[in-house]
Image (cartoon, rainbow, N blue to C red; front, top):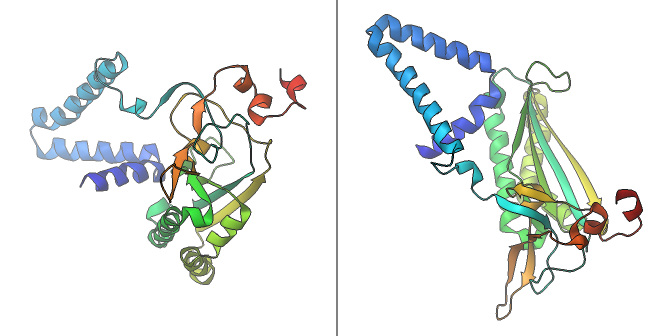
Length: 274
């Protein structure tokens, strides 16, 4: 039941307008007033509102733990590729990295509850599980959770629902191998043979960037792992035959990590950024 509620919270608010939920809530309250004694009908929403206000106040003042702070790293950090022996490399942006932007979109009034959405979600999940299960073979470093944007009625550049993933890979060759793996090919064939013609309200896209060494950097301030900070790199561990996947997130203290140019390990742009 907990997993069902979690899934519902993740999907429902983004797929329907706030006004739809307000109308639904108002309709339910009207029904309660018509069928129940007035004192009883107004008690549940009033109690919930008081609880939310009190809980929010106690969390904001530090009396209750703030779940939003879970996994947040305080201070200034940066993600860099660790050395082969799992030591933090002194050379920033020491190797190339591949970034894949993968997105799906829905232009249907029911959003991700529309026809074909369940099948597409199953294919997406199967592909991410395959990437994680064969990360050494594919050079898959990690990905973000799905990020959702919705049309709020005020932006002309956003229509319907769009979900985006950022993922990180060691090489283009590894990404190419993943793309020709069994799970991805099944999803691609389903899309090309069925979804494109039958479910025209569904859309998919991707962008791929191969970023050379010395041309990428990042910095996080009091931030939870996000983007490349979710990526893990394979390193050799003393006394073990298999590799271990570790995070490259490290403190970014000192002048050698202070500027964008420093985190790229480049001198040619220091004069323009300092």
